[in-house]
Image 1: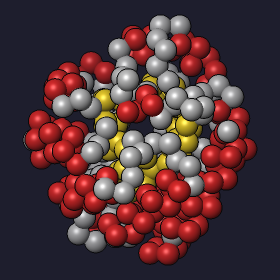
Image 2: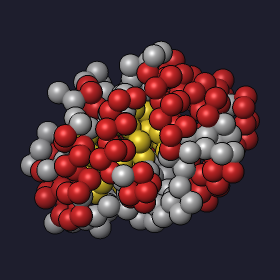
Image 3: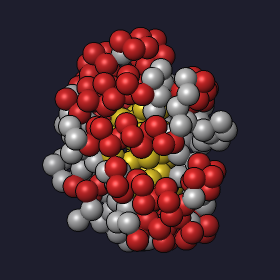
Length: 256
């Protein structure tokens, strides 16, 4: 079993997201440790990119702050290596194809494995174009996480049947961001996926309150939250860790 699959082995998984380097990599480290203390089951680490096409304003701004602070891919790798000496919680990179292209896809996969990363989420890679990323992932024992959207329809079975780690179910059309209401038939999406695979299904995009998390966890094996946590980073800067810990604890309790 992959380390990512293990994150779903003890009930519903809570999966928080952070943009690395916002406001600093030292703060990111503290924030990750706070999330682990609060019960996070798997951590999504965003590598900042200048054109994050799947992101709303909150995470786009966080990427810009991180880049302006001098965050680089190599510095993120070093931070993850330091974290791995303290925690064994599964961690995945959420980033974009250009980050891997510019670094070298195989070199990126190899370095990720060396520092203790367990997989990648690449939202701008269509299923049909994943092979050049998937081969290096398999070579280094990393999971390439597949995404399905509310419009995936007939493609859900195809994508779920071939998915590794977990299946990322996008709850809403559009970009990431806090939403007041989620109206997508999440249960229907997950039923289709589960008809062809036992892959864990986690829901993301738009979830921000314990009530929403609890509702989504009725259908899904895990809940992913990003923008709401990034907003805490934006508000409290270097002092965000305690506030993030409190928030993650509430969200984890809501899905337990």
